[in-house]
Amino acid sequence: MYEVGVSAGFEAAHRLVGDFGPATRLHGHSYRLDVVVRGERLKADGTLFNVVPLQQALAALVGKLHYQNLDEVPELAGINTTMEALAHFCWEQLAPSLRDAGLSSLLVRVWENSTTYAAREDKL
Image 1: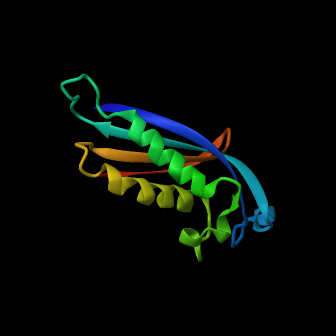
Image 2: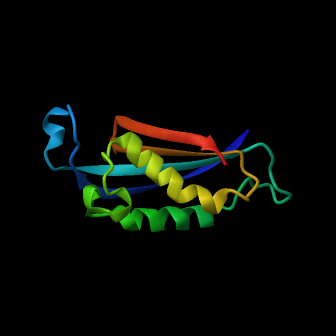
Image 3: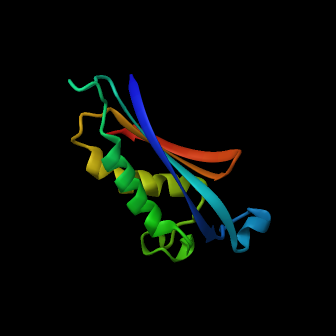
C-alpha cells in the first residue's frame, strides 16, 4: 500500500454541546488538517496521485473554515463540532473529487492541538 498526504492549518472557534466542561464556552483552536490518500498501485509515472489537486482541494476546504466560528458555518449547522464531527465533515467534502482516481482510501485527521486529534478513514 502506498500513501501520499498533504497538511494545512487553520484558526477557528466553536463551542461544544454536552458534558465538555469549559469547552462548552466559545473557544478557539489552531487546527491542523492532514489528508492522506492510499492506493495499491503506482501509475506508470511512478506516482500514486498528483498531490497538486489534493493541495488545491484542501486549500479550498480550509478557506471555508479559517477564522470562522464553526458553529456558524452553514454546512455544519446543527452539528456538535467535535473533532470527530469535523473529521467526518472534511472527509465528506473531499471524497467526491477523489472517488474515480484509482485510490483505495481517504484518511482525514483533524488536530485541535499538537497532541490531540480525531480521524476518519474510509474506502473511496
